[in-house]
Image (cartoon, protein in one colour):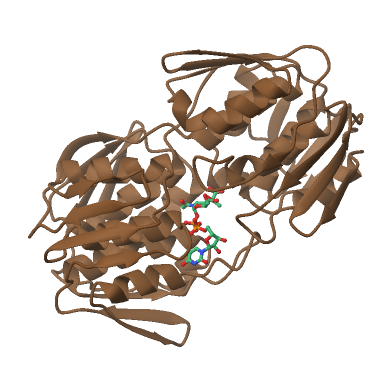
Length: 428
Ligand code: EPZ
């Protein structure tokens, strides 16, 4: 099993480019089920979740050919949803549910294993199913699978009771081939949704309002392929490196990323005293001297992203004073706290609140990653801790960060990927 070895403290300095956004690429891959023509995607991140989605799509009859930073997808399977999304694949990645909408819209049926919960929460899909039922799908739940069927999807008005990113994306991909007009209300507004809508529009879809809370879709008979769609930059990956600049007293330039997608984080970093400079698609963050503690409440976009909560919590261990972090999106997203406290942090969790008292000198330790963003948090802590930090189970990290050790090395960090099986240095 692979782990990271970090020798701290480090100061991150230099330029880094975010990979394509995992959470934009996953729905984009699922959208390839909506046509038999080739869909050409660029800036697809080489991360584990993408490889899982490729395996699932190949299982469903989509040929996926990778090339430098891109993927060419073409559905070649029989003209019906010939297969199901099996538990073995879905259990490793909840986002597998993103094939529900396309399969139903294209073939009139879909059979997908219920995703089950994960480390950060129960992760229900009731809103996905309620929305697809509103479009005319018959929903059956049995033996841990959801079976959907519909002779034809009919446009309707549907209001989500909770803003759900993948729920909005599933409904978008179903409604785009439904008969008539669909109006979706209380949609999630994350930038990844607007990126999916841009792809569906390029395929011939008719969508208004993506990225806002009300989206209107005029159904069309069929969609065509697309010659070239570039996935947007990964704002969470990029934000992680910018937090790394501040926590290490460094100076990092993040290039080719839309600053508006990171606005909540950039505003908060400036409040803590970091220097934030934005010029078109280049974001430079640097910091020296004491850090001011600032509270954060996570919220759906355009609020502070829950996917940066753990990384920001690590930063607040270095602030001069106390800060309170409130996690409102997921019910169990403070698993990184015990590991941070083992490194010398002083954090108390009370329900949805974590209270951090800083600044505390962190010392290197062997810590264990529990989920994707908790892993990134522990790496950031290891960067500034004195001595050696070993982050075990970094397969969690590899789900959403493309070769993080290489990008950190380019920023001057002493970090290596080690295969603990034989302690071979893998980061060459
Ligand atoms: C997406 O997950 C992201 N994943 C998550 O990123 C991200 O943390 C999350 O949105 C919130 O921004 C992908 O896009 C692949 P939700 P998603 O449905 O869509 C409740 C990462 O680290 N809910 O927006 O699964 C749910 O329980 C991952 O990259 C329902 O109650 O999240 C949660 O409390 C982690 N019923 C809230 O809504 C539903 O039917 C938000 O969940 C659906 C969701």
